[in-house]
Image 1 (cartoon, rainbow, N blue to C red):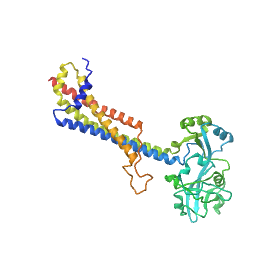
Image 2 (cartoon, rainbow, N blue to C red):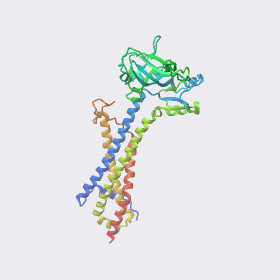
Image 3 (cartoon, rainbow, N blue to C red):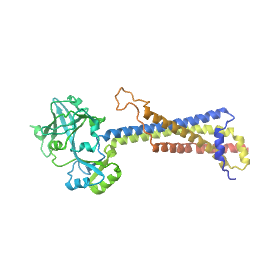
Image 4 (cartoon, rainbow, N blue to C red):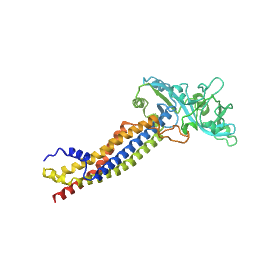
Amino acid sequence: MKYPFYHYIARRYLFSRKSMGAINIISAVSVCGVTLATLALICTLSVFNGFHNLVESMFTHFDPELRIEAARGKKFVPTDSLLAALRGLPDIDVVSPTLEDQAMAQYKDRQTMVTVKGVGDDFLALTTFSDILIGEAPFMLSDDAFDYGILGVQIPHILGSGLHFIDPLTLYAPRRGTRVNLANPLQNVTSLSLYNPGLVFCVNQEKYDASYVVTSLDFARRLFGEPAAVTALELRTSPGSSIPRVKRQLSRLLGPDYVIKDRYEQQADVYRIVSVEKFISYLFLSFILLIACFNIIGSVSMLILDKRPDLGTLRSLGATDGQLARIFIHEAHLIALAGALIGLVLGTLLCLGQQRFGWLTLGGSGAFVIEAYPVSVHLTDVLLVLVTVVVVSALAVRIPVRRLARRAVQKTDE
């Protein structure tokens, strides 16, 4: 006989009162277990999304949308035709050459290694760098008399100069193509001085705040002896442009001699760490979800014992062993789905509440960049968690419940 009502019977079994109250309690515990595991999944993934967005917002102030580098070597000389072709693209608003290299910075009797980044006059139009500047002075990298450098916020502390130093900061860089003179090593070193414009920048990342000095492109070229070469061409796209599409267009235009990097590829190590941690957390919580699903087996097994008289009646009506087993398999799926839906709703509401009110704080008395845990609920994560619960519960309960139901049917026949 074709038996189309197994799902209806499963729903009746789920919500109806059982002869033994313990079955209702165990069923509720099973739902709660799946609910808590689902809630933990959605909250954990949302917190990692929040940290991902936080890191992205930090680097956005300093890193360009797209960056063109040489495929081989550290530096290259951009031709006039290349610059004209890039500036002629309708999706490109700003093309700014930059030159970066290592140098030693000295202020009075203290020294530290820094990365000097020489930028063009359109640097402020390239990024939102002005949003992370600290100080009341106007942005200025050179004038008729002096060269200026904007330091990462930790460098003045390292050098003991303070944020507003009067004496010049001396930078030393080895000269290209010269032999080292052991008798007078300074002959092989270029030294130039930078003055303080009254500004420092703060990215809240030690990679930048403790090592970067932003200055003019002309100063960097004189310091490193590079009259024409650059380390990168940094680009800002037009509003509404698709970064992946522009990137593919640039790859076709420039060929294999150049590498085009978006913001994620410029900070690949940082984003990879966040992604790996998120994936590992997802695996561990999925394993906890699997353990929670085993509670469903105990609940359904007791339900099978409680409904054994009904199995004989259904068998007399023509139901097959497989159809009877599907009743309890569907019952297990309903328990898992109920827990998943409740967990998704509660987890989403908890994340939205954390995002709005910041209930859970990081502590540390202002030692962190933010006060509360950042969260960001993504629809893809919600769907992933829902699919995970359905798949894990199906794998966990299908075979055991089928065997339990068949044994119960066989005992009924006896």
